[in-house]
Amino acid sequence: MNNIKQIFAKCDKCSHEWYIKQFENVRIEGSIDKTFFTCPACHHEYLCYYADLVVRDLQAKLRKVQNKVFSAAGKRLRTLKQEEVELNNAIKERMQSLKVQMEGSD
Ligand SMILES: [Zn+2]
Image (cartoon, rainbow, N blue to C red):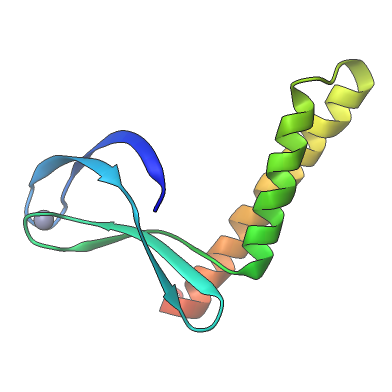
């Protein structure tokens, strides 16, 4: 379970409004995790993202880069910031392809 700041949400299905206190996580198909939340009124499920080993590996690398950013400056900082952008993009792309793999494209 991830602890998150309360996020205000409004359900598309039943118009219920509430604060999301935490996301739910389930392990599906081998090493793929699905993170989502559900409307407390009608139980409609909202997907946050899918993550597999590749995503988790990229997220770990991203955290390392972000930790280094705090103590970096000058050219080193620019290099790290660039790495951060590239890792974020790679994570986004991988999550998107997992979503297509799991749910089919639109
Ligand atoms: Zn609802």
